[in-house]
Length: 362
Ligand code: 1CP
Image 1 (cartoon, rainbow, N blue to C red):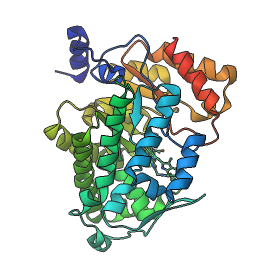
Image 2 (tube, rainbow, N blue to C red; image 1 turned 90 degrees about the vertical axis):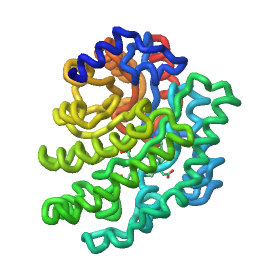
Image 3 (cartoon, rainbow, N blue to C red; image 1 turned 120 degrees about the horizontal axis):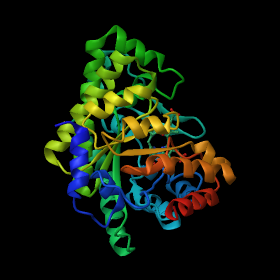
């Protein structure tokens, strides 16, 4: 049976509605108004985040502090009533837990001691990761108990990890980059060596997500932010195949936990990604045309997206129109409203309120 038929049958059977809109949509159901949350919804545009961030010390100190990390995860939910909270952490905790040096330099972003050949992979150790990541599992437990105490029974908790290709980009380059030239060069020139790195990341990431689910994550998301710089063959080898392996491993333990997959910049490669990755829903960026996504992706899987973060930053009538346009095109099928990428740090919180109002009154 095709995935499209599968999805249609699920809608026809009207699989059980929960009190959580996000979980309903991820089962293939349509909801009257879409569930919404925003990528990087906990972050620097919120004064209450900046306050805790300053108190915590470094960015990684905040990530590994289960009380503070739970608190910043909940801040946007209390203010704006999103349907989902996303664990406050970062994709680079996996290289950190594997033993690579990772730090976040103020104003510059992440800095890692770069890996440049298969020989360098010897420094990576799988057996200590859960000891290092334990505070993050505790954060998840703290968030779930806050849901109970703060009457947030309709909010879902999303856990996440970076996808192997995107995490490898930072591990090899040692920082952000325009084109991740060193990483691509390694992937082309020494496929066996590079695939060893990808395999290490597949194992660590699957195991990390499984532990997040054990701790209480109800949905998990894989972020492949740099998927869009790969040609068709590398997209298959470094994005689709590793994603498929991770999702298989997660589904072996937790077959009912949905996985949202985000391959930023994937364009029409989204089709193969939706068909073959094993994901439960596809998150699209703002470069993906809406009608194309409605006609091509939504018949296969629920779609999440895709307001341009700069449109949210700008606000005003353009924001109203853009949100309504997205809803008009995608709300006919299973749909989760989100941005096409992370929220901009200068976004006025009032614009997020405006967004929340428009969606809830649609
Ligand atoms: O100063 C600060 O407070 C640090 C800013 C910051 C924040 C708020 C970083 C550094 N990471 C985060 C949190 C974060 N990162 C979340 C939290 C949950 C949420 O609210 O959404 C998530 C999901 C991420 C994921 C992440 N980190 C991605 C994938 C998604 C994306 O935005 O593309 C990537 C690529 C990173 C790496 C990273 N971490 C931080 C920065 C500045 C970067 C990007 C570096 C670059 O530009 O290449």
